Length: 241
Image: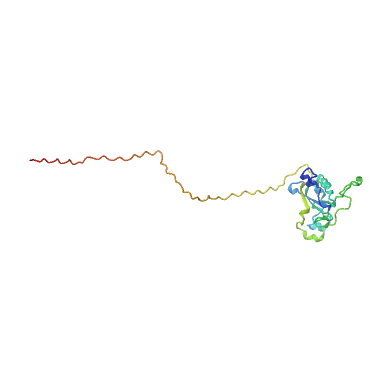
């Protein structure tokens, strides 16, 4: 598909798909809860999921969305473009297998109670005799949900994701559509714990204290002068002959 289409998105949407020519089926679900208008989808809902009582009790119950498929892989391209521009807008889930092939063919009655069929139109046919490849051929699945799968009621239908693919915000619209309303969850970054620096063996060097400024200078003390003795010396006696 990527070698035949101008970009990855177109290749994903239009195929060609590779289901081993066992066919395919797609279910379109209303996705207005995520801001995507259904436009024309709700006017042509046609199937019920095989996980609710109504779908088992009434093979014609048709309020879960729009189901369409074929036993030919090559019809997928024409169907996906047709329903895109018909504005059957919603969320699409497609899987391989119509009559057989894959792990969950739609006609086994485990997925949907009914599904419309897209007929293969060949180049040798008289196209004036073909009004609509989606109708008036009697090839659609109408057999309802198989009772052996009633244990699915109220639960999600187990499906094989390896043979299925999904498309969100499918379908043409001139109105655009709001972005999904669920904001992304932002987890704040944790604050790293404080780590003390490892001890070192270097001695701590203390700086000499600094003398305060504006201190009057200290003068060295002076010695007091020595006073003369207060006793007068005795005069030396005079010797007489």
